Length: 143
Image (cartoon, rainbow, N blue to C red; front, side, top):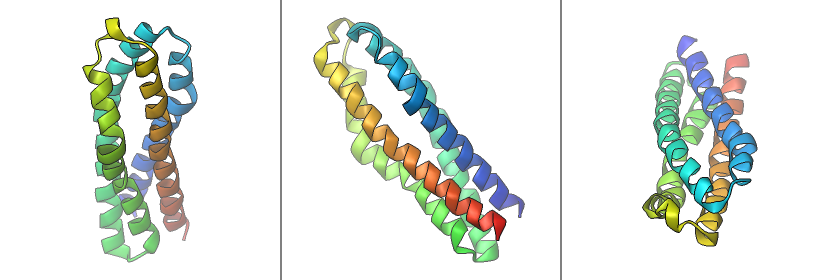
C-alpha cells in the first residue's frame, strides 16, 4: 500500500530529523556562549518548523488514508501519534519558543540558556512521538 509506505517514510524522516536535533544539534549549540547559543537557536528553530510541520501533516494524512483503506490499527495509531505532535508543540513548546524568540541575543544569559535547555527536553517528546508512530506504521507495513 503506497499511502502507508509514504506515511511511514514521512514519520521516519520526521523522527530522524527530531533525533538529530536532540542528539547532535542541541548538545553542540549548548557548548556556545549564551549570546551565540540564542543566535544559533533562532534561525534553526525557524527553518525546522516548516519541515517538521509539513512532515507531521503529511504523515498524518497518509496514515489516516491508509487506515481508511485497510482498517489496520497500525495506520491510525501511527497517524494519531504523529498528529499528537501538534498539541504538544502548541501547548508545551510554543510558549518557550515565544519567550526565546522575543529575547534579544545581546540580552541572552542564564535565563535564555535555561529556556533552551527546557526546549530541548520538550523537543524530545516530539522525537518519541515520531519514533512510536514509525513503529506503529512499521507494524502495519509488515503485516
